[in-house]
Structures are given as C-alpha cells and as structure tokens.
Image 1 (cartoon, rainbow, N blue to C red):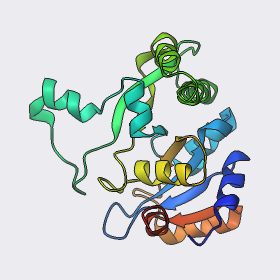
Image 2 (cartoon, rainbow, N blue to C red; image 1 turned 180 degrees about the vertical axis):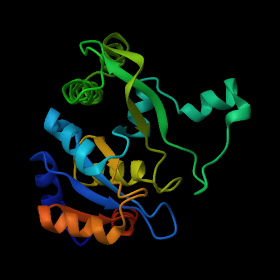
Image 3 (tube, rainbow, N blue to C red; image 1 turned 90 degrees about the horizontal axis):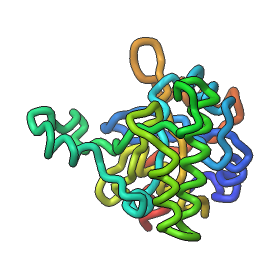
Image 4 (cartoon, one colour; image 1 turned 120 degrees about the horizontal axis):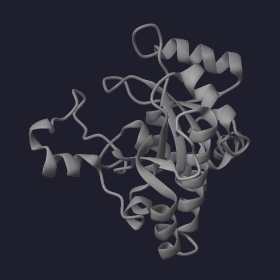
Length: 219
C-alpha cells in the first residue's frame, strides 16, 4: 500500500476521513470513510454536506453474525422473492437492518445519527469481551427500522465493494471493524475520481484505491 498503515490509523483515530475509490469497471465511485470509534455529530455533518451519499455503518461478517444480523437480501428472497434482483455491477448488496438507538428522538439529525453510530461501535467493541453481552446490548438498545443502515462485509474474496474494502482496511490497520461510509456525489452523478482526488488534496485527506487494499490484505 502506498500509504503506511500507521498513517492511516492515526488519521482515522484522530477523526479524519480517508477517501476510498473502488475499481475501474465496477462502481467507479469514491466513498468518504470514518472510523466509528471517532465519530461525532460533526462527522455526520461532513458526510452529509461534502460526501452527500447514504451514510452507512459498516462492520464485519463475523461481528454481524455474533449479533444475530443477516443480509437484507436473505429476507427479500424469503418474503419478497419478486423483488430480488442483482444490481447492474453484479454483487449482492451488503445491507442488513436500518436502526436507531433508543435514546434518539427522530433519529435523522446529525446528533441522533452520531449517537446511533457511537452506540453501534460500543456494541461491536463489546463482542471481544462478551459476545452474549454484546448481543443483548444490541437488541435492548436499538430498534428497527431506523435511520442508520448497517452494512455487513461479505469478505474481499466474495465481494469487492466499499463495505469490504473498508472492513478489510480497518482490520489491516488493527482497528475494530466498525466504520462509517458515504458515497461522494457530484452534479447529478457520482463525484468523478479526479475531482475526489482534488478534494482530498485540498483538504489534506488520504486517498486510497481499492486495488491497493486488495494487494496488501490479500497477498
């Protein structure tokens, strides 16, 4: 990887975002990525104003299974099979449930979404200490549907979307698989790669390509 892992970790733990471009020929999109352990309402404000895409919480497959979460595609296949179709780029989506923390009011403003994400991070962090406690915490403290979609990584061997790139990168640099992402949007379409690079340069943010992550974590 062109960027040292220590530098990536320091940026994320300091509350700074990194920008991740997936791949030529896939979505060809850039996501703004934060570490959920360093999220504040200002993080959500930046994602909403500077990125503009759907603000999602990301965790790993193992973590999700320990909380009893499953992919929304499995629910759709069972309950609404006529609606099941793969996106144009071919991969099944990473969506699971959409949740709010019970302490939020409407769940949608910056403070409410930050609180839900903070509590999701606490829940995932609890898994290492006590899986049963983490699962109980999740079902006691959240309700669905809410305003924060949870994305579950399918692993880079199975899918190479931003969910998998983010979760693999977090694991690679030694952080909990607990992130927040949003696609960067432009005028009418996704923000082009060259404009995302310029944004990163002007703001001093790291820009990492999916191929760099794949080469490093899968070697």
